[in-house]
Length: 140
Image 1 (cartoon, rainbow, N blue to C red):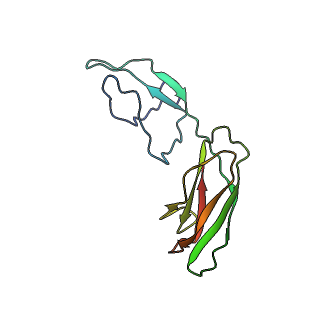
Image 2: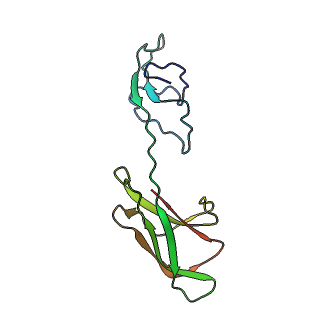
Image 3: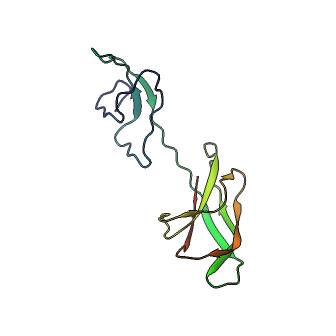
């Protein structure tokens, strides 16, 4: 859990020479770890002093998500989806907007293309079937 590798846990298989990217699955727990360490290794020995990077998991959530439905048909939606940006947007690159079955974003369907920072709305074209989508979710 420190820069020297005390209490370490391996998160990826040994990679071949030239591989310098390892992907972490979404929602990977970081507790109790504080650093990501990279070791070099040969067939005989592992490097004793790794390269360490402080593990930072920034969070930035939007608020006040709303849809003013302007479609007059009962089983269809359409209108403008709006939200309030997070207070800190330095690490936000875009927003993904979805219609979803529940507030957690289960069984979601994306609305349009990703929206750039500085924009806090997207149009949902009229005549979009309601299906079972009862929620709008916005991800940073």
